[in-house]
Amino acid sequence: MSDFISHFAVALPAVFFVVDPFGVVPIFLAMTVGDPQEKVSEMALRACVVAAGVLLFFAMFGGLVFKVLGVTLGAFKVAGGILLLITSLDMLRARPSQTRTSAPERTEATFKEDVAIVPLAMPLLAGPGSIATVMVLISKGRGIVPVISVVLSIVLSLIASYFVLRAAVVVQRVLKRSGMAILERLFGLILAAIAVQFIGEGARDLLELH
Image (cartoon, rainbow, N blue to C red):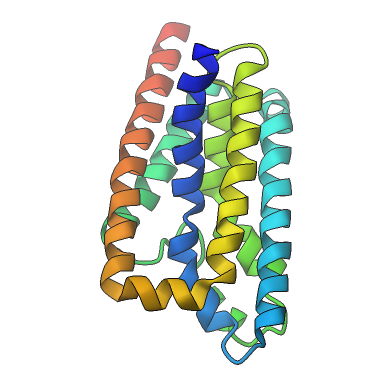
């Protein structure tokens, strides 16, 4: 039980902070401006369900990618850590991360009728950083403990994301720009620490191979 609690205590904040629904709020509002609340809620629900499915798929079967491509887990930890570090630095500067979506993609999305799958589910919620995170987290430890903790973390994070996006207007009104920036920087700081830990563990694994 203690192993589950310790693993879950790392997995839940890591997944939630890299999914970062609060950072998606301004983009989501820009993409759904003028849409009725019913449509906004429906798009938020579908986006979170699809994002959860994507993350669960990579969490459960991502290990096969290592074997097919011949990539070691240590190398993936380093690469995933670097990607998370770049994302966290953008969050610390309270600006949209280019690893999730670019300015032209966001501009194009504002003219789409339905943004639930692309770009909301992918790559905003289930982007490269979150995919790398769940794959690394599920490789930490053995047995069923990391699987349960990561799956539970994904489900809880996307449920929370749904409620944040569904109430995006209220969230932005309450937090305002300054509050959103503070949250982004707080999430970014914690995510940077997790990224450094991933890089350190990956480097250690690579050194042990030689």
